[in-house]
Length: 297
Length: 297
Image 1 (tube, each protein chain N blue to C red):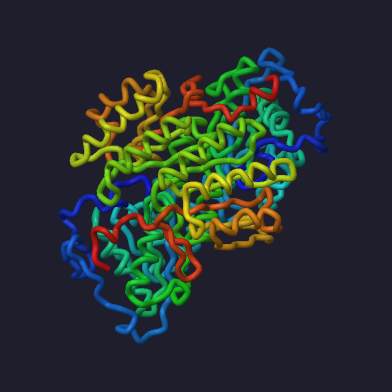
Image 2: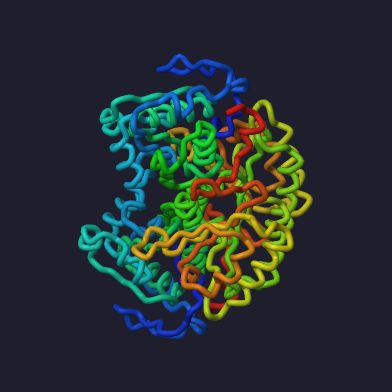
C-alpha cells in the first residue's frame, strides 16, 4: 500500500470497478449499506500488507491469510502481484484500478458483513499511508464494529524498509516518514513537518514524491531540505522497489530537484534523505548508529 | 533487531560467545583480522531481518536466504526464533547472548572473508536500530568492500509495523521512530527530537523505552510529550510483539509514566504515541489519514 500511488487516492479519473456496478465518483461517494442491511453472520476481514513488489517479499502470515480468504479485494496492480496459486484458491477477486480506495474498502466490508471471509490487500504495510485506518473508519460508519468482523491487520515490509535495504544502511538511526501528497493533508502542515525533521537530524523517507498534479510540492520539499542540510547530503532514490522496473540511484541533495524531471522520480518512487552523518561508501548509503564513538574498529 | 534490547548494545556484562573464544570486553574491542589475513575467495554476507518474533512473520526471501547460508550468526534469542528445519540445514550456528553485537558482526564478516556464505540475523529490520550499518562499517575497517562480500540486506517487518498492526491503525499518517537509548546517541539530541516530533503532530514509535540503567530517559520522554500533547492522547504499548509473552495495552499519555514501573514496559516493549487526531475505538487506535475531509462515509 505504501509504494504506490493510489494509497492517497489522488487520481479520481477512470475509477470504475471491474466486477461491480459501483461507479460513483469517489468525491461524492456515500456509504451505502449499513449493518442493518445484512442478515448473515459476518465473516472475517483482514487487511494484508504484501510488502515490496515481488511475492518473496510477503510474510508467511500474509500468504496464509490470503489462502484462507474467500474474497480478495484490492487495487488491480496489487492483486496482480499475488502469485496465481493463491488467487486461484479464492472464490472471488474484486479489483479496481488506481483510485477508488474508499469504494473498494467499503466493498470489502460489505462482503464481510454479508458473511464472507475477506482479505483487503495493498503493497507495503497496512499502517503506512494505507487502508488499515480507512477500514476501521468505514466499519464504524456502517454501525458495525471491528470486533464483530474479527478485524485483523497483517503487517508487511514498508517501502522505507525495502528501499533502505536496496540502498544499504541509510535508516539505522532515528527516522521520519513524510508523504508529499497534499490530497488529504494540507501542504503547510507537510512543509512544517519537513522543516522539523530536517532540523533535527532525522533521516527522512519521502513517500509519494511526485505527480503531474503536485510538482510544486516536490520542489518545495527540496528547497526546505536545503535550508537545513548541506548540498552534498546523500540521497537515495528507489523507483519501483521489488518490481521489474526497479531502479536505484544514489545522489545528493543538490541534484535532487532536477531529477524530478527525470523518469526515476514518479509515483512509484521512494526517496531516502540522509542526515548530517550519512555517507556513501562502495555504492551504499550508511547512516552510522554511533558505535564508532564507543568501539575501536 | 528492532524489538529487542541488544540492538543498541547497552549491556556489556556476560558477553561470552558460545562457539568461539572471543570474550574480550566490547568497550575495548579492536578489529582483529583484516582482509590480508584471509587467502580464500570470500563468501556472501547477508543481513537478514526476521520480522516479529514468530516464524510466520518472516518473509519468504528471508527464509530462502537462511536456507542458503552455510553459517548463521546472531544473538541467541534471535537464533532460537528461527525454525529448526532452517537451522538444521546450516553447517554452523554462532550465537552470543545479549550484547556483543560488534564482536558478533565482526565474527560474521571474518567467516565470510574465510570463504563461507554467512547470514547475520536479527528481529525486525536490519535498518531499524540494527546491524546493517555496523556490518558496513566493520567491512570497511577491515580493508574489504561490500561488493567483494556481495553484501545484501534482506528487509523485515519492523517493530513499529508489527506493533502498529496489533494496535489497529495508529501509524497511518506521517510518523517518527525514536530510540530512548542514550548508549550511542547523547540524551540532549534524543530530547530535541522528541520535542520536534511531538510539536509537529507526527505519530511516534518509541524503541528501547526502558532499562534499569535509563529509567530517567523514559520519565523525561513522558514529560516532553506532555508539554506538547494532551493528557488523553492515546498511547499503545506492545510488550514482546509476536512472542509467547506478548501483551498489548491501550492507555493515554497521562498514565504512561507510571506504567514505567510495571512489567509491561521493559526492553522488549515498543510504544506508539498517537497524534492530536488519534482516537480509540473498539479497543483499537485509529489515526485518520484525512479521508473524512474528502469523503462522506
